[in-house]
Amino acid sequence: MIQRRGSRIVYQNRWMTVREDEVEFADGSRGIYGVVDKPHFALVMPLDGDHLYLVRQYRYPVGSWEWEFPQGSAPNDPRLDPAQLAAQELREETGLRAGRLAKLGFLYEAYGYANQGFHIFVASALQLGHTAHERGEAGMELHRLSLSDVKAMIRDGTLRDAPSVSAFALLMLSDHVEVDHA
Image (cartoon, rainbow, N blue to C red):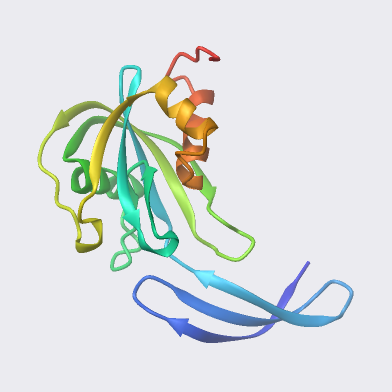
């Protein structure tokens, strides 16, 4: 086991804190460990029969337009109930309202260097409303795709958002859809 012996913040903003921890390893040797502290987020998969809604938006860190399920955090309210956060993100990014919201699981995004995890929800009994995009979501597009199309996007590398791909895998293992194994 690794024991923390000291810690210092090296960078901080409203969305994250980066800290450097002085650690002691099980063999008694010492070293450092960089950790990114970020609040957990909610990811929601809007399911409409055998179709899902995905968004496509520009992601600045990778410099490209990317596909993903609606997702987000509440850095100003980290204690917000994950189901409320999922419903809020769904409304803001897609305009959709869920008549039913079921929790599918919780995963960590990248626990080798960050403590951020995400709650995964399936939204159904959907009703269309109006979006409320944030400034960084300008140009976000909403697309309704068949389960087969989403599988193909994962296979060919078009859908490469790790939380979305892992959430889709959980969906395929769940009782929410009939799996055709195609």
